[in-house]
Image (tube, protein in one colour):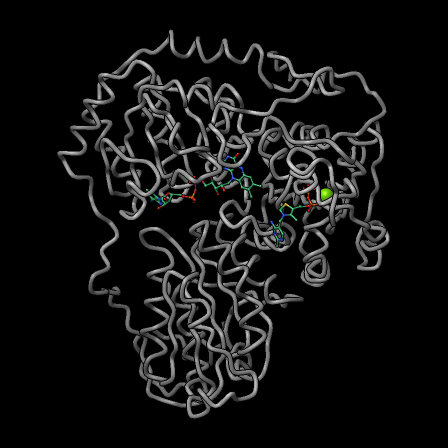
Amino acid sequence: MTDALAQRTLLGMPSTRTGAQIIWECLVHEGVNTVFGYPGGAILPAYDAMLDYPVRHVLVRHEQGATHMADGYARAGGGVGVAMATSGPGATNMVTGIATAMMDSVPMVCITGQVPSKLIGYDAFQETDITGITLPITKHSYLVTRIEDIMPAMKEAFHLAKSGRPGPVLVDITKDAQQAKMEFAWDDTPVKLRGYRPQLGAAKSELMKAAELIRASKKPVILAGQGILQSGAMREVRAFAELIDAPVALTLLGLGGFPASHPLSIGMMGMHGESWVNHAIQEADLLLAFGMRFDDRVTGNLKTYAQNAKKIHIDIDPSEINKNVLADAAIVADLREALKDLLDVVAKADHEPWLKYIASMKGDSAVRDIQALPDSGHLYAPHVINDIWRITEGKAIVVTDVGQHQMWEAQYYKHELPRTLITSGGLGTMGFGLPAAIGAKIARPDAEVWAIVGDGGFQMTAAELTTAAQEGVKVNVAIINNGFLGMVRQWQEFFYERRYAATPLRSPDFVKLAEAHGLMGLRVEKRGELVDAVQKARQAEGTVVMDFRVEQEDSVYPMVPAGADLDAMIRRPQPSVLVETGADTI
Ligand SMILES: Cc1cc2nc3c(=O)[nH]c(=O)nc-3n(C[C@H](O)[C@H](O)[C@H](O)COP(=O)(O)OP(=O)(O)OC[C@H]3O[C@@H](n4cnc5c(N)ncnc54)[C@H](O)[C@@H]3O)c2cc1C
Ligand SMILES: Cc1ncc(C[n+]2csc(CCOP(=O)(O)OP(=O)(O)O)c2C)c(N)n1
Ligand SMILES: [Mg+2]
């Protein structure tokens, strides 16, 4: 830090600042060291001031990329991601990324420039009502028109983004507010907002109700969601599951919150979850929902969902309780705190018969014994993902895009550690994978980061390859290239008589595309070439793009059709090239 900078950022020292400088003062005080963004007229004062502050700016190629990078950065590192853009088209380009973060409760602060306050409402050049547009997809948003409101808005934005149920907050700052000057001193008194008290403790009466339900249960299932990661409750969930000897099923966003190799882990639930997991949920007498929101991809038909089970729901957001599934005991609290309390009042239990029964259901189910499969000359996406899992020893951070490859990742990459799967669950945003992987790598430079993407989704934000090249960020990009918008093709195969409308997909030569960016490109067409190529990519210095030419018309099994009963799963037709057995030989 230069002397001039040190002076500017001295705590509590009054000095004259522009609004633009105050933005950076606030960011530095909030501990931000990286901002993902793209400049333009209305945010130019802030960009000019940026040069004097110790913050890395990552120049993206599209503002959607900035929001996904900030999102990946937050999910991988656990902090708040920050994205910046100009007014009008810059701000509207952020909308998809903001909605993605909102649906998956990701802490993010987006700063946009706005036209001068006097011009608001006059259709000024690049004027858009971005606070209006993003009202339903932000946790909160601010339109700041006066310099003296910048610091309070920024402080509140960070507080809101990361406290309680996290989420994205937008701060839209007019150009004149950025250009104005005032005496400034950082105020480090904690933010207090009337009516916003997210850290509620567990009510004693509900805790006791929950303890009684647990005591009476013979067939419990823990439903482990993303709230585990958000509250940092991995250790408590594990201690709790071991104490009451209950199997743990995970949501897509919960994967990594409980180690896949733990004997009590039974796998993913829901539309593309393991069949025995969905059956166990339907037969359970008690569901313990830990930081999960009973998404429709998880429950299937609500009318027939786990009808014999009592439900204990622990969630920090009271609006989630009784939203989709009625709770018999509802604990509105931070999961980690609630589990600490519950651990004190719950007795040790033994559910061996129930666990054995669930294990027996694997016999005719879909643990996919793909490693034992003789090489038929075909390359299947599960091969690719399972080999990446084996080679990286399950320790990489994997960021996916959206589609079939995303589901195969969830099924074939076994996550042991929290924050090692980053994926757009709620919004299902294609184009998320590559930029979010870049953000994840910047947050965790020590980690090996893979982007597993489809040929369709990759093309939505492929321009961010240049960002990776310019920033010297290494991610390994595995394109699961099936020549189709595969997940939609699968729905057409199952539900639209194979009428493949607008799903066959032509792509550029991905190897040449990589090379045009000065990056390494590799093509893999046979299973025998897979391992060497993956190793080569890992050893290469920069970002590598791998074009895996996989079987074109394979489908993800099992599948619960949308709205069907959770145990009404479509299974892989037999005989099949991919064998499903109960034995996982890996
Ligand atoms: C193609 C596709 C297929 C999919 N298929 C499946 C599938 O088969 N199975 C599946 O599971 N998902 C699937 N999904 C994802 C699904 O849509 C949801 O995103 C996912 O199920 C949500 O998981 P969650 O409830 O754990 O996480 P979130 O939606 O993030 O909810 C987390 C919950 O935890 C709470 N919380 C946050 N912090 C705390 C805290 N500190 N303490 C307590 N509670 C807290 C929040 O309030 C929230 O209610 C699919 C998505 C796509 C795109
Ligand atoms: C932005 C966006 N547009 C459309 C969709 C609908 N959609 C979901 S999966 C999918 C196909 C994805 O194709 P691809 O990226 O090739 O992945 P694959 O399913 O083939 O693995 C589409 C179009 C979406 N989720 N997001
Ligand atoms: Mg595809």
